[in-house]
Length: 106
Image (cartoon, rainbow, N blue to C red):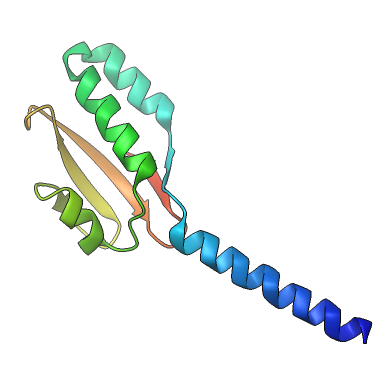
């Protein structure tokens, strides 16, 4: 009987992990790059911070979901996206791992 309980517990953990991965918000990696960028281009500060807050709350699972939120984003490949920042005065290039819910600042 304990073996069945152990298997059931493992299945429940895997199911919860998959559910969490599907509905988890995005994590933005390399925030230091954004901070350095803001330091170099202070006029882009508010736009970059707004993008950062929106990206952290987003739950993109594929490029189409991203495109529905950011119509002017350029999707270069399955993972690479270019965002227009501050009225298209600046561009932010990222790699997105949709399955892992991670946004890497390039």
